[in-house]
Image (cartoon, rainbow, N blue to C red; front, top):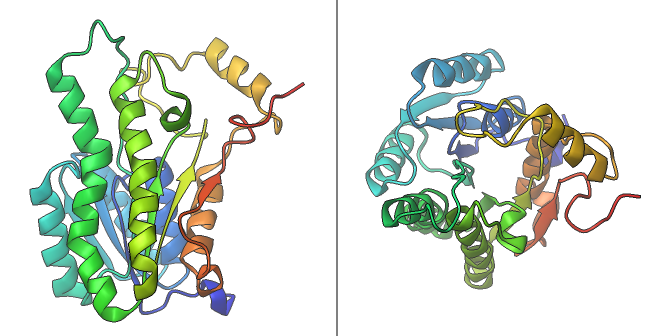
Length: 259
């Protein structure tokens, strides 16, 4: 293992880590020596499966169930993680779902829920864990963002607004935390090859997938393990000069037009 990517003695929290991108990040850091804090909203079986995989890789593990959009969940994670591991050195704000309704269908409850889930949750994480990072003189924060936060989306307005706010939160935190040895960056995943529930992702049909792939210069979807490796790089000592950065792992979908 490269010394630059060895996280022995460090602890990382990943919200929404029962499956897909979050799971891949947990396992990437587990195999690199970190203690891992797993969070999932409701599926205990998925969280337990990730914990078992991480343990097989030799990691110290903790599972805390709960909705990351609720301050009480983040507070519980903080208490339990610090009791078991001392402090959280790194976290990835990853938990998110999407809403597919137009402006005329969205109500106030939808608006507040999705802003809380994808923006307020990142704020709660910062308030909970940045003080410990500042005291230690070292910390790594990564926000999993999305292209909708740049380009918007008629059927995803709360989601898009939250992601746009997350972009600004990344830069705002980075501007003040660098002097304490804390970096804050964001990753834009794009159309990642993940398991998607048709109930929550009704747009992902075979035709939709084919159209998206045709617009990707790589002609393939990014994989969760590729995003996980990028997280490891951004948390490594070699990336200490990188902060307030946006890293696109979307196969070129956002900025490059395929032929």
